[in-house]
Length: 236
Image 1 (cartoon, one colour):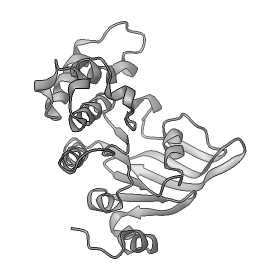
Image 2: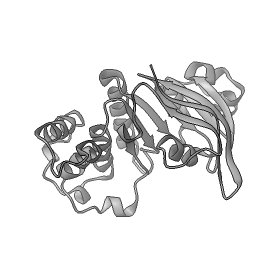
Image 3: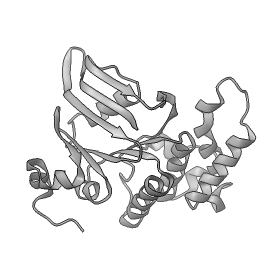
Protein backbone atom coordinates (compact mmCIF):
# COMPACT_ATOMS: atom_id res chain seq x y z
CA UNK A 1 0.00 0.00 0.00
CA UNK A 2 1.45 3.33 -1.10
CA UNK A 3 1.62 6.06 1.58
CA UNK A 4 3.41 8.91 -0.23
CA UNK A 5 3.50 9.60 -3.95
CA UNK A 6 5.24 12.45 -5.80
CA UNK A 7 4.22 12.95 -9.42
CA UNK A 8 6.69 15.09 -11.39
CA UNK A 9 6.74 17.63 -8.54
CA UNK A 10 8.81 20.81 -8.72
CA UNK A 11 9.34 23.35 -5.94
CA UNK A 12 10.54 26.93 -5.91
CA UNK A 13 10.96 30.14 -3.95
CA UNK A 14 10.03 33.57 -5.31
CA UNK A 15 9.81 32.26 -8.85
CA UNK A 16 13.10 30.32 -8.77
CA UNK A 17 12.87 26.53 -9.14
CA UNK A 18 15.14 24.82 -6.59
CA UNK A 19 13.99 21.22 -7.08
CA UNK A 20 12.43 19.81 -10.22
CA UNK A 21 10.91 16.67 -11.69
CA UNK A 22 10.62 14.55 -8.54
CA UNK A 23 8.64 11.34 -9.06
CA UNK A 24 8.74 8.57 -6.47
CA UNK A 25 6.52 6.58 -4.15
CA UNK A 26 6.90 5.01 -0.73
CA UNK A 27 5.00 1.85 0.12
CA UNK A 28 4.05 0.59 3.56
CA UNK A 29 7.10 -0.98 5.20
CA UNK A 30 9.68 0.76 3.00
CA UNK A 31 12.79 2.44 4.40
CA UNK A 32 13.66 5.27 2.02
CA UNK A 33 16.78 7.40 2.37
CA UNK A 34 16.90 10.79 0.65
CA UNK A 35 20.51 11.70 -0.13
CA UNK A 36 22.31 14.53 -1.89
CA UNK A 37 24.79 17.30 -1.30
CA UNK A 38 24.02 20.53 0.59
CA UNK A 39 21.61 22.69 -1.37
CA UNK A 40 20.34 19.79 -3.44
CA UNK A 41 16.69 20.28 -2.42
CA UNK A 42 16.34 17.78 0.41
CA UNK A 43 14.91 20.28 2.93
CA UNK A 44 12.54 21.68 0.32
CA UNK A 45 11.22 18.20 -0.42
CA UNK A 46 10.71 17.55 3.32
CA UNK A 47 8.51 20.64 3.50
CA UNK A 48 6.56 19.32 0.53
CA UNK A 49 6.03 15.90 2.12
CA UNK A 50 4.81 17.55 5.33
CA UNK A 51 2.36 19.72 3.44
CA UNK A 52 4.22 22.90 4.47
CA UNK A 53 5.10 23.81 0.87
CA UNK A 54 3.05 23.28 -2.24
CA UNK A 55 4.70 22.26 -5.52
CA UNK A 56 4.70 24.83 -8.31
CA UNK A 57 3.94 21.95 -10.67
CA UNK A 58 3.12 18.30 -10.27
CA UNK A 59 1.64 16.81 -7.11
CA UNK A 60 2.53 15.39 -3.71
CA UNK A 61 -0.09 12.98 -2.38
CA UNK A 62 -0.64 11.10 0.86
CA UNK A 63 -2.33 7.77 0.18
CA UNK A 64 -3.58 4.70 1.99
CA UNK A 65 -5.63 6.73 4.45
CA UNK A 66 -2.53 8.60 5.69
CA UNK A 67 -3.23 12.19 6.72
CA UNK A 68 -0.49 14.87 6.75
CA UNK A 69 -0.95 15.35 10.51
CA UNK A 70 -0.36 11.63 11.09
CA UNK A 71 3.27 11.73 9.95
CA UNK A 72 5.77 11.40 12.79
CA UNK A 73 8.45 14.03 12.18
CA UNK A 74 11.92 14.36 13.68
CA UNK A 75 13.45 17.66 12.49
CA UNK A 76 17.07 18.68 12.71
CA UNK A 77 17.73 19.61 16.32
CA UNK A 78 18.43 23.23 17.26
CA UNK A 79 20.16 24.71 20.31
CA UNK A 80 16.78 25.86 21.64
CA UNK A 81 15.45 22.30 21.42
CA UNK A 82 18.48 20.90 23.24
CA UNK A 83 17.75 23.22 26.18
CA UNK A 84 14.01 22.59 26.27
CA UNK A 85 12.85 22.75 29.94
CA UNK A 86 10.59 19.70 30.18
CA UNK A 87 10.75 16.13 31.41
CA UNK A 88 11.48 13.27 29.03
CA UNK A 89 7.94 11.98 29.50
CA UNK A 90 6.41 15.40 28.71
CA UNK A 91 8.45 15.71 25.52
CA UNK A 92 7.41 12.26 24.29
CA UNK A 93 3.75 12.74 25.27
CA UNK A 94 3.64 15.97 23.25
CA UNK A 95 3.86 13.79 20.15
CA UNK A 96 0.16 13.05 20.72
CA UNK A 97 -0.91 16.70 20.35
CA UNK A 98 -2.25 16.23 16.83
CA UNK A 99 -4.35 13.23 17.88
CA UNK A 100 -6.13 14.92 20.78
CA UNK A 101 -7.86 17.33 18.37
CA UNK A 102 -10.32 19.38 20.44
CA UNK A 103 -9.81 17.47 23.68
CA UNK A 104 -8.23 19.72 26.36
CA UNK A 105 -6.33 16.81 27.91
CA UNK A 106 -4.35 13.66 27.11
CA UNK A 107 -6.29 10.41 27.32
CA UNK A 108 -5.21 7.28 29.18
CA UNK A 109 -4.35 5.76 25.80
CA UNK A 110 -2.12 8.76 24.97
CA UNK A 111 -0.23 8.34 28.24
CA UNK A 112 0.02 4.57 27.87
CA UNK A 113 1.35 4.95 24.33
CA UNK A 114 4.04 7.41 25.46
CA UNK A 115 5.21 5.07 28.21
CA UNK A 116 5.26 2.06 25.89
CA UNK A 117 7.32 3.93 23.31
CA UNK A 118 9.77 5.12 25.96
CA UNK A 119 10.22 1.46 26.84
CA UNK A 120 10.84 0.60 23.19
CA UNK A 121 13.46 3.35 22.95
CA UNK A 122 15.19 2.13 26.11
CA UNK A 123 14.45 5.43 27.84
CA UNK A 124 11.77 4.42 30.38
CA UNK A 125 14.17 4.84 33.31
CA UNK A 126 14.70 8.48 32.26
CA UNK A 127 11.03 9.48 32.01
CA UNK A 128 11.24 11.93 34.92
CA UNK A 129 14.64 13.35 33.97
CA UNK A 130 14.94 16.84 32.51
CA UNK A 131 15.35 16.61 28.77
CA UNK A 132 18.13 19.22 28.63
CA UNK A 133 20.26 17.17 31.06
CA UNK A 134 20.51 14.21 28.68
CA UNK A 135 23.38 13.44 26.33
CA UNK A 136 23.00 14.22 22.63
CA UNK A 137 22.32 10.60 21.79
CA UNK A 138 19.73 10.27 24.55
CA UNK A 139 18.00 13.45 23.41
CA UNK A 140 17.70 12.11 19.88
CA UNK A 141 16.21 8.87 21.18
CA UNK A 142 13.64 10.92 23.10
CA UNK A 143 12.80 12.98 20.00
CA UNK A 144 12.54 9.78 17.97
CA UNK A 145 10.13 8.46 20.63
CA UNK A 146 8.12 11.70 20.33
CA UNK A 147 7.89 11.29 16.54
CA UNK A 148 6.88 7.65 16.95
CA UNK A 149 4.18 8.71 19.43
CA UNK A 150 2.57 10.74 16.64
CA UNK A 151 2.16 7.97 14.07
CA UNK A 152 1.35 4.34 13.37
CA UNK A 153 2.34 4.50 9.70
CA UNK A 154 5.13 6.86 8.66
CA UNK A 155 8.23 8.46 10.23
CA UNK A 156 10.02 11.34 8.52
CA UNK A 157 13.53 11.87 9.92
CA UNK A 158 15.68 14.85 8.91
CA UNK A 159 19.39 14.19 9.51
CA UNK A 160 18.71 12.38 12.82
CA UNK A 161 22.36 11.46 13.49
CA UNK A 162 23.84 14.92 12.80
CA UNK A 163 26.28 15.87 15.56
CA UNK A 164 26.20 12.48 17.30
CA UNK A 165 29.32 10.50 18.17
CA UNK A 166 29.84 7.09 16.47
CA UNK A 167 28.34 4.92 19.26
CA UNK A 168 25.22 7.11 19.51
CA UNK A 169 24.96 7.14 15.70
CA UNK A 170 25.04 3.35 15.49
CA UNK A 171 22.47 3.04 18.29
CA UNK A 172 20.08 5.41 16.53
CA UNK A 173 20.47 3.53 13.24
CA UNK A 174 19.72 0.30 15.12
CA UNK A 175 16.58 1.76 16.66
CA UNK A 176 15.31 3.10 13.32
CA UNK A 177 15.88 -0.28 11.67
CA UNK A 178 14.00 -1.96 14.53
CA UNK A 179 11.09 0.47 14.21
CA UNK A 180 10.92 -0.26 10.50
CA UNK A 181 11.46 -4.02 10.65
CA UNK A 182 9.68 -5.03 13.84
CA UNK A 183 6.94 -2.40 14.11
CA UNK A 184 6.35 -2.19 10.35
CA UNK A 185 6.46 1.61 10.29
CA UNK A 186 7.55 3.17 7.02
CA UNK A 187 10.65 5.37 7.32
CA UNK A 188 11.77 8.28 5.16
CA UNK A 189 15.16 9.54 6.32
CA UNK A 190 17.20 12.47 5.00
CA UNK A 191 20.90 11.68 5.27
CA UNK A 192 24.31 12.93 4.17
CA UNK A 193 25.79 9.49 4.90
CA UNK A 194 25.34 7.62 1.62
CA UNK A 195 27.26 4.58 2.88
CA UNK A 196 24.90 4.19 5.84
CA UNK A 197 21.93 4.83 3.54
CA UNK A 198 22.67 1.89 1.24
CA UNK A 199 23.50 -0.30 4.24
CA UNK A 200 20.24 0.25 6.12
CA UNK A 201 17.63 1.51 3.64
CA UNK A 202 15.50 -0.48 1.21
CA UNK A 203 15.26 2.42 -1.27
CA UNK A 204 17.30 5.49 -2.22
CA UNK A 205 16.18 8.85 -3.60
CA UNK A 206 19.18 10.91 -4.76
CA UNK A 207 18.62 14.62 -5.36
CA UNK A 208 20.74 17.27 -7.06
CA UNK A 209 18.20 20.08 -7.55
CA UNK A 210 16.38 17.49 -9.61
CA UNK A 211 15.79 13.79 -9.18
CA UNK A 212 18.98 11.93 -10.08
CA UNK A 213 17.95 8.45 -8.97
CA UNK A 214 15.10 6.54 -7.37
CA UNK A 215 15.11 2.80 -6.82
CA UNK A 216 16.21 0.06 -4.46
CA UNK A 217 19.48 0.29 -2.54
CA UNK A 218 20.80 -2.63 -4.59
CA UNK A 219 19.99 -0.83 -7.83
CA UNK A 220 21.59 2.36 -6.53
CA UNK A 221 24.89 0.64 -5.76
CA UNK A 222 25.10 -0.48 -9.41
CA UNK A 223 23.97 2.85 -10.85
CA UNK A 224 26.13 5.63 -12.25
CA UNK A 225 25.40 7.90 -9.29
CA UNK A 226 25.88 5.12 -6.78
CA UNK A 227 29.31 4.24 -8.16
CA UNK A 228 30.26 7.93 -8.26
CA UNK A 229 29.20 8.86 -4.74
CA UNK A 230 30.14 5.59 -3.04
CA UNK A 231 33.61 5.77 -4.55
CA UNK A 232 33.73 2.10 -5.46
CA UNK A 233 33.88 0.96 -1.81
CA UNK A 234 32.25 -2.23 -0.60
CA UNK A 235 29.16 -2.09 1.60
CA UNK A 236 29.13 -4.54 4.49
